[in-house]
Length: 238
Image 1 (spheres, rainbow, N blue to C red):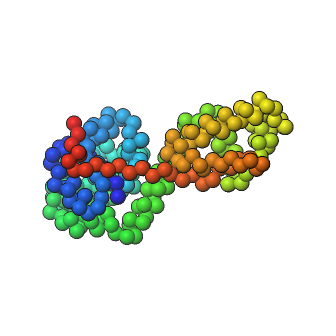
Image 2: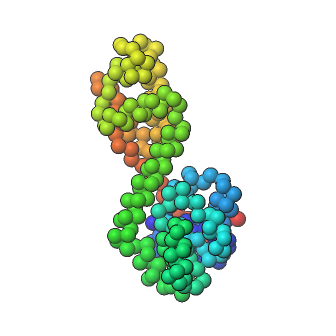
Image 3: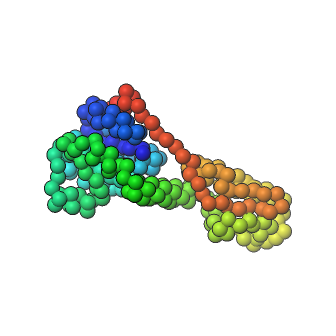
């Protein structure tokens, strides 16, 4: 699991990071990201790769409440680390803000491991994480498309994986067929740009298929997996 640990003191987290690494989790510990999120700097390109977010006990409650809108970046599991065990009432109050798990300095690593590795919970979280990441990437892709690229993308998506010929595409896009050489060249350029933007958004560019004699089709979009690994010795940031 890729974990983002937000903190006000990087050095304070060294032992905890080592314990999480020992459990097989990859951790990015950052003070700078905390500050960037608090000041509304868009960090979607980084945050979308994390499955879990932990708020350190070095962050006061008021700061956590201010950062809670990080939920819009689709991190499925958000945890709060505290100096002492919270009461049930306190936990219920935090759950209203989207915090779904809690542990304290008195908790054992077995407790923490159980939160992250419970099989049913982990499967549910991974599925939720995948779907949220995919939806976020599709939203980013739509924002990046020109009007005609978006029109082409919509046509192909609505075909549910079926092919559409160049002639039918030109009819859909420009209202005439057969396509002129100029239209065919223009269509090729739009397809090329769309494929590039699909890849830039984080999807496999081969999802957009070109087949001689059949035309074009859009397969189900699959993610290009990116793993962020930060060894303990390199985890210190300003």
